[in-house]
Length: 237
Image (cartoon, rainbow, N blue to C red; front, side, top):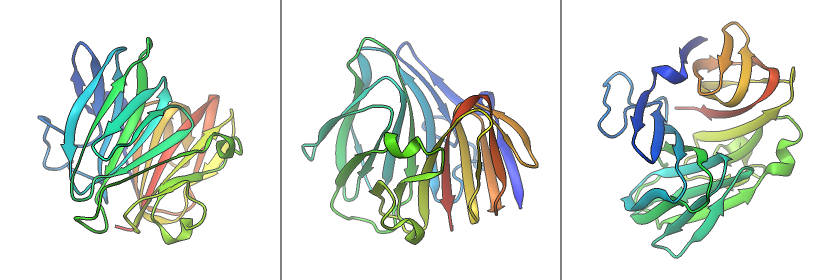
């Protein structure tokens, strides 16, 4: 096993009058040839969008996009006629496939804070599709809950499926002192969305920090005194 820690302040950052976005990998004008992806995970942006603003209509193709809101609400609209509001406890997946256009806006009076993640699809040029699901009740267990996955072991349990059978996203909401174990995986990307944790053999991780683990196999992550919300991608490639 090997672990690489990326702190929140070490990531690329885009700041404008309406957007504050931290990029875990090369994104837009920020490029580091040594940091373009981790396994199949291509984008992992931690974003805050000001009220009354957002991303106007723009295109995507052949990428699986998963959005998870931490605070506030985000309005999604796309060229396939889908429209919905994403809020904490609801996971959204958009498969761009052969091509789709969408917008993401904050039409509320409070900032919206969310994490958006892109993975490479298993097949290209498929018809675009969209799915969302409530998982709030399941997260109350404090266990890792598959929320957007194509992994065979998550079949029948994941909230929404993605077009990639070698990657899956799970989430957990931990009360103070509660622990989870990282399941066996060649690649595991553990992101601390809220609160803080202690990762076995590594140390403390705060909100916005991430651990990139090669050869994860049961390492324990324990929430600190404020509890924690974590997002975990496990991948076989």
